[in-house]
Amino acid sequence: MDWVNAIVQGTLLGGLYALFAAGLSLIFGVMRLVNIAHGDLIVLGAYLGLTVTAATGLHPLLALLLVVPTMAAIGYVLQRGLLNQTLGDDLLPPLLVTFGLSVILQNTLLEVYSADPQKISAGALETASVQLGGLSLGVLPLFTFGLAISVIWGLQWMFYRTAMGRAFRAVSDNQDIAQLMGLNRRHVFGLAMALALAVTAIAGILLGIRTSFDPAIGGGRLIFGFEAVIIGGLGNLWGTLAGGVILGVAQTVGAKIDPGWQILSGHLAFLLILAIRPNGLFPRISA
Amino acid sequence: MSLQDYSVTRSSPAARIAALCALVGLALLIAAPWWAGRADLRLMGELFLYLSLASLWNLMAGYAGLVSVGQQAFVGFGGYMFFALTMFAVLHPLAAIALAGVLGALVSVPVAVLIFRLRGAYFAIGTWVIAEVFRLGFAQVSALGGGSGSSLPVAIVKSLASKRAMREALSYWLALGAAVLVITTIYLFLRSRKGLALTAIRDNELAAGSLGIDIWRTKFIVYVVTSAMTAMIGALIFLQKLRISPGAAFNVNDWTAFVIFIVVIGGIGTIEGPIIGTLLFFALRETLADLGTTYLIVLGAVAIVMMLKAPKGVWGLIRARFDLQLFPLGYRVVKRAEHKGQND
Image (cartoon, rainbow over all chains, first blue to last red; front, side):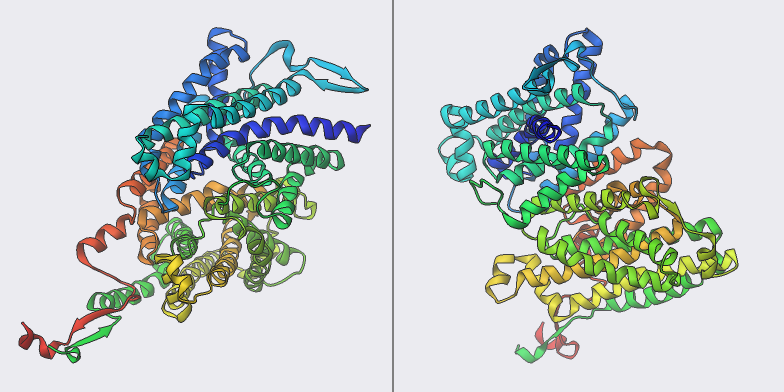
C-alpha cells in the first residue's frame, strides 16, 4: 500500500510539474524560444502571490485573479521590450539574454524579499485531505492536478479552436508567411509570452502554497519543467502532463527508497528516457 | 598586377608586437611572487583560473556552438576528484591534478553521448541537469563529507611545500601555468586541421557538414577536451580554497554565470575576448563587490545590453575599428612590399 501511495502522490505532484512545464512548452512551440529565466518567473509569481495575500488578506486562490493578469502584462512587456530583439536564426542571443534576465530576477527578489524562506498561507486548504480506498489524498494536490488538466485542456482548445490559437500556429509554422497574411508576429509573440506567464503565475502560487520557497530555487523549477517537456516530447501538451507525472512518480518512489534520493531519481529517470527515447515519449514536432 | 604581387600570411606586425609583449608580460608575471603582495598574488591566481574557465567555455560555445550552462559539473568533479585522490589514494597533489583531468575526460564521454541528443537551448539545460546529478550524487558520498563537504587535511597541504610563502607562490604559478596551458592549447588547436574544421562549423554548420566535416565528432572532441581541462582547473580552484562542499563545487553562479558574462562582455568566438572580459570582470568586481546583489544585477544588465547592442563584445568593437588580430589565426592577403610602388 505504501508503494501505491507513493505512486499516487507522485502522480498528483506531476500536475504541479506539468504547470511548470506548460508555459515553457507553449513559448517553445510558438517562437522556438527557450526561456532560461522561466524558473525565476515561477518564483516571481509565488512572491507576487505572497505580497497580494499579505497586503489584502485575500485567500491565495483569489489572489490569482490579481497575480495572473499582472504576470501576463509583465510577459507581454518583456517580450515586446526585450525578447523580440533576440529572435532570429542565432541561438546564442535568446539563451544569453534570458540567462542574464534570470540572474537579474533572482538577485532583485533577493534584494526585495531577502533570502529567508517564505510560504503562502492558505488556511485549511493546506492540510485538508480525503480518504479514498485506504489512501489519504491531500485536497491541495488533487486540486493542483485538476487545475493542471484544465489548464492544458484550455491551452489545447485555445490552440485549435480560436483565432488567437490559429495565429500562434501560423507564426509557429512560418513567421514570414504569417507576417504577409497580416499577422504582426511581434504582437503574437507578446501574446504567447503573456499567456505563458499567466500559466506561470498559477504554477507559482500553487508552488508557494505547497512548499516554502526562496529566491534561489528558480533554477531547480526550470529543470523540472524542462524535464517534463522533454520526457513528454516536444510540442505535445498532453505529453508534457505525462512527462510531469513520470517525473513526479520517479521522485516520490525515489524518496521512498531513500529520502536523499528524491530529486536525484527524478533526474536519473529523465536521463534514462533520454537514452532510450531521445525525442521523448510522445513527440509531435522535431526540434 | 599579377598573382605574384600578393602573398598569403597569417602573421601581422600587430601579432608580432603582441607576441613580444606577451612574452615580457609572462616573464613579469612569473616573477610576481617577488614583487606582489600576498593579497594581490591570491587575486591574480583567481584571475588566471577564471581566465582559463572562460577560454574553455568560449572554445565550446563560441567555436563548437555547444552552449553549456553546466560546466560547474566538471569544475566540481575535478575538485572532488582532487580531494578524493589526495585523501584516499595518497597521491601527490600535482599528480592528483593531472589525474583529475584524465578522469574528467573519461566521465565526459558518456555524458556527451547522452546530452548530444539534445539540440540548441535544450542542450544547455541538459548540461545543467548533468551538473545537478553530479551535485546530488557527491552529496550522497559520506566519505567526502556528504552535503556539508570536507577540508583538505593539513598533511596534504604541507606535502606541496613546507613553507607558507612557498605554497602560495606555487599555487599562483600553477594557476598561471594553467592559464598559459589552456590558451596555448586552444591557439594551437584552432590553427590545426581540426581547428579549421571547427571554425568552419562556427561560421556555417550546414556548409561545413556538406564539405565533409564530421560535425558530431568534432564537437565531441571539443567537449571531451574542454571537460578534461575544466576538471583540472576545478582541482586547482579547490586546492586554493582548501575546502569543498557540493554547494560551492557545483555552483552555477560562480562557475558558469560569471564565466558566460566574461566571455559575452569580452567577445565570444575569439581568443582575445575572454582575456579582455576577465580583466573587465575583475575590475568591475573589485570596484562594485561591496554592493552585493546589486553588483550581480548590474553584471546581468551589462551582459544583456552587450548581447543586444554589441554581440561581438568589447574585442569585436576594437577589431571592427582597428582590424586587429593579436592571435594570428586567420589568413590574410597582403601585397608584397617591393611591388608596392608599381601597383599604385
